Image 1 (cartoon, rainbow, N blue to C red):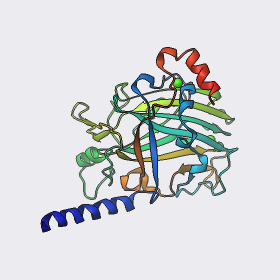
Image 2: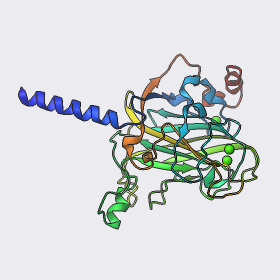
Image 3: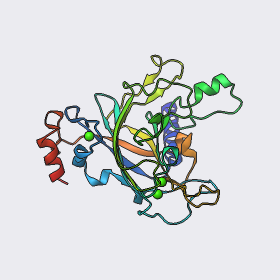
Image 4: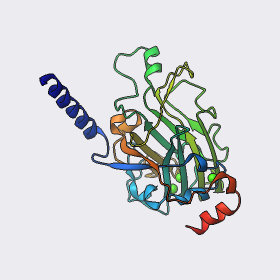
Length: 300
Ligand SMILES: [Ca+2]
Ligand SMILES: [Ca+2]
Ligand SMILES: [Ca+2]
């Protein structure tokens, strides 16, 4: 009996310390689930996403500046410079996360100055997925991104050579359609220094054990209802008009001011995976191009 109690107490302590580590502290948000019959159609038109209630979307109002760079913008949030609505959703059968984003930027620099970085710890293991002390080069290669993954995504109409960049790995196979795919559209011209609005939708699978040398030996996460995942968004807005060190023009907007979320899952925010909401009238693929879209746009 005593052993059981000690084990129970130890697990409570482990749970509570994990909860304290997650960031922002006390934060819990929810991940909307798509039914298998109505997965988003990746075409750069977000009409089908409008069935998702507004409270699931994050906007720029949910974000704070998260950077220690010298040229970081230090003024208040300015929706005439960056405005966004973005969301991470999921689907049980495919074990995919589906992401949607609409983003307005007054100054399109193009490429890595204006992208979204998504970080996700699917099995909520927490802890670093960056180098550990005294690791060999081989161990570092294995460790980076092993139990949580992070991607920079560029929805920039071909301005960037690749649309997805899992920047901490040496793997070159993670952009295969069995793992990820995207579609996007833009209003404006990428890299023109002018205004740009982007509409993007994409899916991404995640790994419990990502092995950069071994796609088939890597363990894909099996997402389940009620599971809590770790999630972070880093929304970059570089308005690099003069590019000087003190330009006060570079932003990394995130849920928390911490910068450690780049490579430590203890600093990701908690999100719980929801069941399908059957009360919603989804836009199914069959009616996707016609009546369903009209209905979805009328329902806004
Ligand atoms: Ca679509
Ligand atoms: Ca801007
Ligand atoms: Ca910009």
